[in-house]
Amino acid sequence: MLSANWGMQIAGMAFQTCSISDEKYFLNKTHSAIIYKNTAYILTEIPFSLRYLFKSIISNSLKWNKEAANAENKYVFNCMNTDKICIFTDNGKMHSIKVADIPLVRFRDKGTPADNLSNYDSAQERMLYVAPLASVKENTLLFVTAASMCKLVSGAEFDVAKRTIVSTKLAEEDSLIFVGSADEMEQVVFQSEGGYFLRFQKQDISAMKKTSIGVRGMKLAEGDKLDHAYLLESRQEYTITYHDKPYVLNRIKLSKRDSKGIKPRI
Image (cartoon, rainbow, N blue to C red; front, side, top):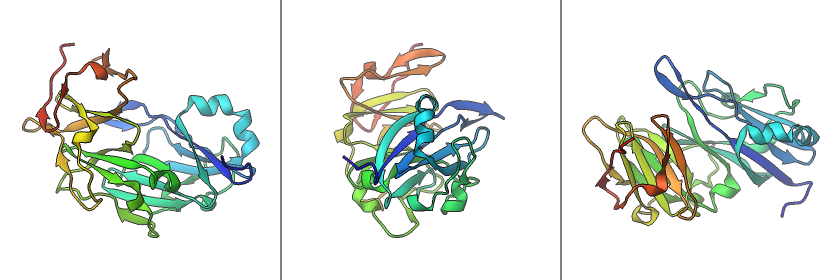
């Protein structure tokens, strides 16, 4: 348990898919809060853009705005004031930001763009996963690309001094669609743009180095590519909205990796 003086709490990102000019973006406000001494740090994604803002606030402000913060966030995690924040993006890079570099402002102030605090470029890339280095290096991360290449990588490989590194090898014209902590999950579901789903055991995915390209997770039809990837814990039910109707991912027939997906009859 971290002490009050040295503990930090980060509330992670909650996303909503919206359509603008026929392109999908993750748009709704996100706040990531870190408590450091009497300070909390916030990560915000601006609606109708892909820019992320970092800011620090007095921790009492987070307490007074706890309900709003919880409503606008997907997860909460802890880190130290000497830690770094790791940003994994769709173009296969990992950027890091020193927590101590995030400026102090008020809770509702905009904060500082992630572009100004790191090598992250909101015009060229999109954040997929954000976590403190202390958490990353103790976990195994799942990487999934649009071409259905996947692999498990030890988080210890991302404990580096550089501000920006290549987080995974990508084939030409391929991109990441998912990065996430996989240690406590047991199954994986891939969803393609063509509406095909494949569920299989996480253990079917090989553990590899970050410099490897991975193994094929799902056989795709010509012109199709992956749109989403999900990690499941078998004892918990996971429901998504598909064609405006609820669809339970755990009820998809369990198959083997590198199989063809099935198309739901909805």
